[in-house]
Image (cartoon, rainbow, N blue to C red; front, side):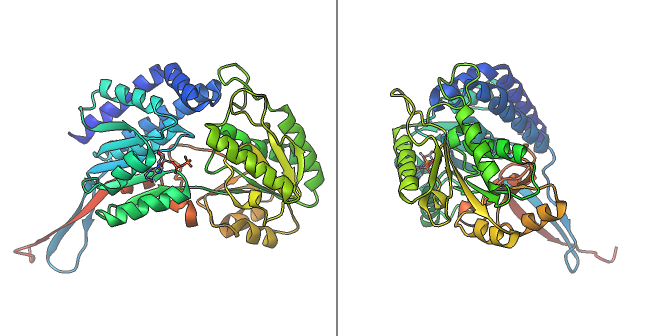
Length: 422
Ligand code: ADP
């Protein structure tokens, strides 16, 4: 198929996804429990935007002519890699679908995508719309299945040419090993995080409180890049903790299909129990429970928005990815110290930096070993901005132009010239 045809199909698919915004959002909420308003107003529009973004790339992917030594005509062809295996998680099923499918289709690949077992519906519906838009049968295949069976089969398949995985760091290690043991398919990994959110002494405290709350509690705390270590300068610490607690107390938790709801239930009983265990561990290790700390009601996997202060670096709640509505607030004295502590983790996905001083902002930015630094903002996910992790938060980048190279092979073409003197 020509690049222009691919582009037109992607643009038509984006139009159809946009037209079916409300059904897609409802499926997402039904599967995942996230507030319908957020799915309808944020996630589906982001999915549409991302597919349009990659439609724009489809006819702008090409190789180079290379000035090699000697009488040679040398060029590179950028070819599709082949069959892309893609494994996605349950926290943002449609967005993860878009991040994977958009660049792979723009580059001319075929896809076998496995959704998470908790959230199979929205990607099936979206794939149906891609086919309505004219994508030939067999190009985009969505498989519903479990990780150790369907997921492992994809990771170890000899005829899958590339694997893109988003999920936990532990499972990332498993799929990388399966890929290595089978056909050495290249693997991109987007894994866990324990992102620092650093509030400096000159920050606008009210704005920082609100964004720190959003950075942690958004999507029921189920974000790989959640700002889950809130470092606050000692001079504003007490004020920050009071305000963070007041904000958490105001958080509206309930039936995700109702209007005005900020937080729905956690994804499933495993995660629900795991989060409650971490909360108990926070209390036992001596952190101060400012608010929350338990399940909410007796029906559904709802957890009270929870805030801990006086959290120390060594505590489990400051080290592990909790993936729930549990904010940990830590105190720091100076920038050198906070850089060292912020980087003292096996993860390196993202960071938030809150200051009104540009020099402080860029000093911290350059010192933090993370794939994204948000300065005075958080969770800004434009289609063009690359996303990915340092250290055990992953390998490679998704979104933006960077994602294209995950789905392309480079072929060098070398041709001697007979009459170079001409
Ligand atoms: P989480 O802890 O967030 O559920 P996982 O990493 O277990 O994260 O899941 C992310 C995705 O990886 C899901 O689609 C899941 O089915 C898949 N998965 C889980 N275990 C394996 C495995 N052994 N091999 C391949 N895929 C897996």
